[in-house]
Length: 373
Image (cartoon, rainbow, N blue to C red):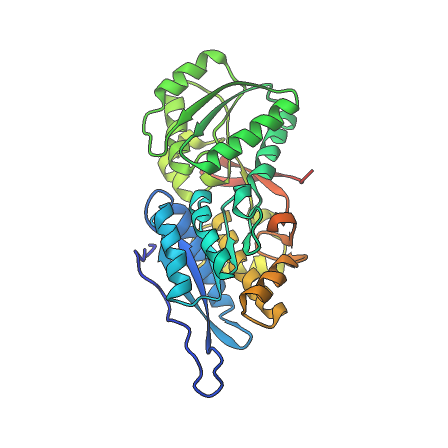
């Protein structure tokens, strides 16, 4: 059972050696949604970071401590969390946030303080655009949306799609727009865009409006709760059309909420254990699955990669100073991470393949990879 730390900081402030004046500990801050709408994702990310920390508890011969602040899935709380980590905890680097909008609230603060901020799952291109200290371990929405459109056209042979998009979330809007542009560029037709809102419980109006249009595919790049309810209500209203979504829905709660209704749902994703090939990935998967008793998912892998990348950059920089760690992160090449081999590309976005998954037998099953074009 997950233990949720609400609004508290885990770990101690970095202490100083009275003899040398050198920090005895290296503090890594984490601003993550442990409660609120994005808690299911945040808790998995945090577990990945915790296990990575236990696997590699030191850097530069100094103990690493983790400082966690719950953002409560809120932008204001996210901004306050970053300020708190920098001003009170004196962190050397920051991991977070999980949601693009909340990350965008925190990165400007880290930028001004010259503290590297690496996000595991915030996929909006704006997160790292024109920023020196913002990084990520996930691919961006541009790459994900285009890969989804290519998969829809090339593998699913979809000609006509309908889009159901959470207009309250920057992530969902951006992903939908990138998908539609690429799908149409490849000769497909977008029949209709139906907006929803985070927390909506009834999608019968949207489903009833789309059903007569007979789309080949529903593209629903939303978070897990809305996608699970959408799938259940589509089944209840006898609309039997495949659903393709994004990485934001790939959490165990999708399966527990959606049950049989999410069978066959497909995803663009960052990771699957079948595609994990590096020694670090194998060691991390073994540790994660032994502790939790279930298969690892992408959010844990990406959270772990944030931690491992930060420590690798500190090692290569020979320092925990912000500018030096930033330069080392930006120069990352062929790092054998948990989610794959990572090279930092333009705007500090990792260059990596997009994994396609589907729900089969109540599990996330590997389908194929879509290379970056």
